[in-house]
Length: 306
Image (cartoon, rainbow, N blue to C red; front, top):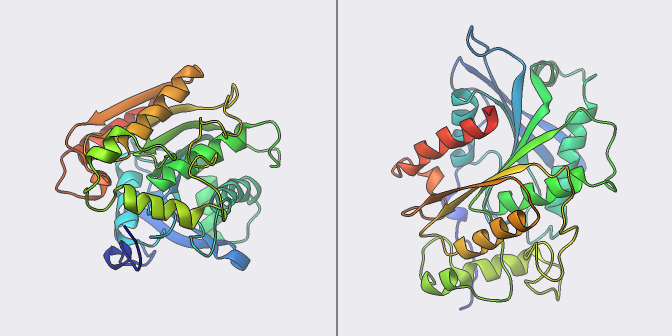
């Protein structure tokens, strides 16, 4: 099957950063204008029962590395909802997209966002200064859905490794929330075959997305895709790799790769919890019609606060 044109692009609408409520401050801030790296920041208003400093979520949106942004309405809504309900501060990263920007640009943007948060305490920007004064960088969580979960894994892996170049930092990654993570390989697993006609995501679409993301000539057994495969990098992860919460949907064609990811974490004796929603499609958490979305919010809140 030949994939061309916009598949998910027509579904994307953008929304401004200005806060839509009095219980939440939100703004955009440019991290590196030379590559259009910026983030949308969400900060709850403290109340008598929600005191600062807040834990901080660094969020990476989905979209197959090609679609959506931190300004996309669906992700703006999700981040506002989580920031208010948990409560937690949220930094939604607007990383570079394919096909113009291939591996490893997205991972580098994630790492540089962490470096930015680590080194901006003396900023002259009032909004950013207020944000940084209201968060606890030692309680940082990397969260992503689909390809964003792939980014979260690689950023966490590299940040805690001994050879990563980052300043002496207060950031401590306490956990990774991996929502229907986008992994794969050359092999076609049972769920990909069984759900080959699935809307939004199926093996034809994911193969096309991987082709746009990977360097020319690389196969889907590349270390970015098949993280615990023969070409994997730092597959043992290291002792500082944080706990992981993985959400898997029973109607998601990629679910068998997600199970392999969980198995790989467990083989390395990592702390991993799995939530399985039998009737959940890929992206269920973005649709109010799915009751699993509310259940998942509760699960993430518990993961962050326990």
